[in-house]
Amino acid sequence: MRNAHDDFLNARFFAGLDGLRCLSIVAVVAYHVAGSHQGLVGRGYLGVSLFFAISGFLITTLLLRERDKAGHISLRGFFARRALRIFPLYYTVLGLYAALVFVSEKDAVVRGDFFANLPAFLTYTSNWFVPPAADKRVIFYFAWSLATEEQFYLLWPLVMALSRRTWTPVLFMGGLLVVSVGAPWAVSAGLLDASHLGGRVLTSISASICMGCLAAHLTHSPKGFAWVSRVLGRVWSVPLMVVLLAGVVVWHEAPHWLISLVMTALVVATCIREQHPLAPVLGHAWVRYVGTVSYGVYLLHMLALNVVRKALPGQGVAVYFVLTLAASVVAATLSHRYFESWFIKLKGRFDWREGSRHAPEPRRVRAPQAAAPKPGSLVGVGVEA
Image 1 (cartoon, helix red, strand yellow):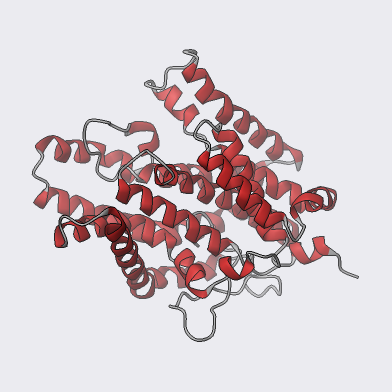
Image 2 (spheres, helix red, strand yellow):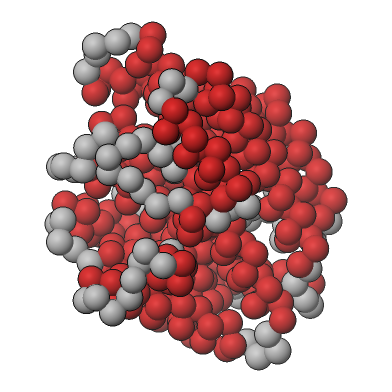
């Protein structure tokens, strides 16, 4: 007789995660539209940390299942799938930015900085080599989070695939978690210089990704799953985590490790207990849909914001937010349907799950119709599959 852990290991979909992606991208868009660090909207940048927690948990879950069912982790397959999903749109948007900056950017300093930063954008190292600037615009700065993701995609599968003992990756990621928590403290204490490359590398490690990875290892184990489910597998677990998350977000002095911990707990609770009071919200057709195209929304929302501001000058933040989000979703939909889908189809050639009865079904992104679309599949990682 199958138990809850067996159901978890054989789950084809984690139904609520697209809803969490929607929450994340809406928060990020609101933050960039408002351009303010004050109030609740000023905390919207934390939506990226929720993306990171989802990514760490799902990537590790997939790698663990591949190792168990296929007997090994195919690095070739993993890197091919990631490249086909992420690179086409990223480099297309980056090329569009380069063309627009070259043609229309009037500020010579901002234009020069963008092209000086271009090698970092091309190599996914902007989180190390493109620092923020309070006194001027840094075009394409938001790519720092995508750089963090790509560095995780490059390093973590290597660690898991090459480790002979199952606890080695756990120790490795636990060490990175300690660094991710300690490095910002060391900077504030004057023990680490974040202006130097070494300091920037250490402070770029995401606690949310680390916690997501460790949570995936914990829930993959029968004993770990049993322990976690006592707290996060209850009918009230997801609502409680949402309340706690709202609390730490509103609390501006909350340490980032605590915010990451609550976000990771929310991700885990959403995956191990799909039936809960917030399921109708996270599972709403439009909410899930925005989550499925959130990668495109993230890459395109600043372009959409600039178009909206030029088309309708003098409007308020609320108007700009609604129009920017709508324009970004439309643009991301067109991109996914007519451009990205060609590359996504090729991913199956490198998927160990092809032909397996445990393989997640491919997700086709369509605008919601009368019948609700299928929930997001396990292949969804980072900001989108």
